Each structure stands twice: as structure tokens, then as C-alpha cells.
Amino acid sequence: MNDFESQWESISAKGNVAGRLRVYPDHLLDFFISFSLSGHREMAIEAKGVSNDFGVLPTFENLDVILKETASGLSIGLVLTDHELVKSFSVMCYDIAERSKRGETVEAAAVIAFACLRDWADLLKRQGQHGLNRNEAIGLWGELNTLDSLLESTTGLELQIVQGWRGPDGDQRDIGFNKTRIEVKTQLSTKSIGLKISSLDQLDDRGDQLNVVLNRISPSEAGISVAGLIEKIRGYMTSARIALSEFERKVMLAEFDPDNEYCIENFGLDERVVYDITYNFPRLIPSNVPIGIKSAEYEIAGTSIAGFQISWNHLLEKISE
Image (cartoon, rainbow, N blue to C red; front, side, top):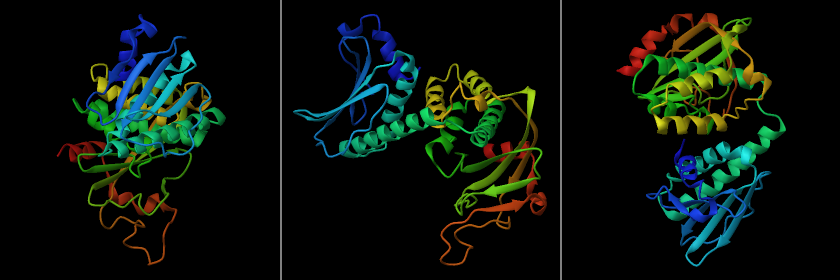
């Protein structure tokens, strides 16, 4: 449970009679949770000294959003109208609170909170329309499988590893911590080895230690699915509450849907190839393309990079240095 979910649970027996309970007391914004007269979960975000200039409110199918000016500033009220979405609502509230921590002023934090609310409206709309396709689910499988292997090989680094999973937050890096970046690629074993690179920034180390982990997989009844990997990773964090809350947030941002047919398809890991991205690795990055080239997508042949392979254990040793 994150702070929001646990606090709602603590006052659920009293319902509306419990009044408002403040969550995240050290935050620049004031977060309050409560129950409505009809028993719906509510959250209010209050920003002292901030005026209403945030534009059009995002719309949700199962969530009412109320924006109003108060004597002290601005208030954003969220009321969940579908009880089956209580977990998703708690994760969304947690995400808004965590991301808006980055604001250095009350106004900056409010801007981030409002942008986050829009992001969630877009995310839930996308999930309702189509969800992950098979290629996207395979990509998510690869990231989760890599996280699983990192958690299995280390002790006490649950929060650091989960925070380092950057993909769901839209970061160019898939996984990054301890000055190490890991780009995760996943492909079916029926294809020849190769790396599809989507941008000039993807293999730009920017001063970090950079590695690519290529997972080659096949459909297998004896394998594991995206849903199975998520359950397995949750098991590493039974006593790491903050890490688990952060993981649940990112799972939702990754558009995981337990009812999606591709999220319950089992795959087996046939081969894991790890590449060390050194200065002479064949790649296109901003510093080595002609002036005027702003973007590029390309593929690196596996035969050309065989000499850059290192073992998974070697990567773990580098991360631990």
C-alpha cells in the first residue's frame, strides 16, 4: 500500500464521519483524503497563493475533477465514482504527489500536479481504447525480466533498482542507477540478432557507463508472462513498502492491463546477450553525425558487434563497483 491507500483504509470504517486526513505533510502542496457522503473516495490538492490559470480540466470516465478558487488559493478535488478502481486511484494520487515534489515553489508544484493529472487522463483513455499491442507487451516483458534478474542478484537495492526503471516515465533510459545505464532490447528468437535503435540519444552514454541487454525470447507454455513477472517482482518487495508503491506506479504508467491477451502470453528466455557500449561501438549519436541531422532510426547488425559482448555477471560486477 502507498500512503494514500493505507490512509483511506485507516478511516474506511468511519467513512464520511472521519472528515479529512492530511497526507504528505511535508509537501509544498496540501493533500487531503476523505470519503464523500455517498462513500466515494476523495482527494483534494490545495495550493496556497496560486490562482486558477491552468486552462481546461482533463476529463475522466470514472472520476470527477473539481477545480475551484478558495480564500487561500486553489483547490483541485478528485472524486472516484467507480469502487473497482480504488487501487488505480490510489496509485494515481501517489504519482501526482511524488512527481510534484520536484517543484521548488508552490506554484511550480501545482503546475506539475496539473500536468500529471492530464497525463493520467490521457493514459486511462489510451488503455480504454486499445491497450498494449503484442510488440509493446514484448518490450515490457524484456524490461521486467531484466528488473527481475537485477533484483534476484542483489540485496537491499529494491528501491534503487525500481527508481532506476525509467522507461515508464518517458525517459530515454530504460534502466539507470549507480552511474550505469541499461538499454533493454527484446526480440523473438526467430529473428537474426540485431539492435533496432530509435533515436540519436539512445546509445549516447552522456558520461555514464552504458550497456545494452538483448533478450531473445520464444512463446513457451513453461515460460512466464508480463503479468507473471509483475507478480514475481512484487514478491521481492514485501518488506519494502516505498519500493512497492513506486513499482505499482510505474506498472500502471507502462499501461499494464491484466486482462490484455498479450500480457498473459508466456515467453521463455532463450538467450540474453549483453553489450558493452565503448567509444568504438558502432552507433549514431549527436556528436558523430553531420551538422543538420536532428534525428535517426537505424539497425545495427549483430555480426558487427559480437566483439563487444560481456557476460551478465560482468555487468553485475560493473554495477556494484
